[in-house]
Image (cartoon, rainbow, N blue to C red; front, top):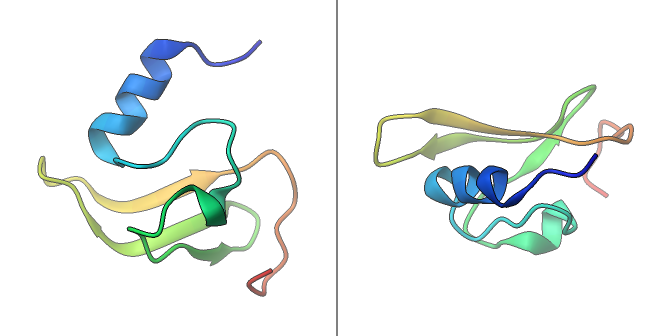
Length: 68
């Protein structure tokens, strides 16, 4: 099952420029995404207009502990 348009709308509301299904590191240059072992990618400096902090992107494949 693939995420629908509602999931993309939610992602866009908080993390403009990221698109579901695209490669994380090429999806947007607006974020300082770094490898977060066992999770995916993380921008610890992220702050959304709503006050949400710490952008974490979980991926469906193992990510090593160095930037690819």
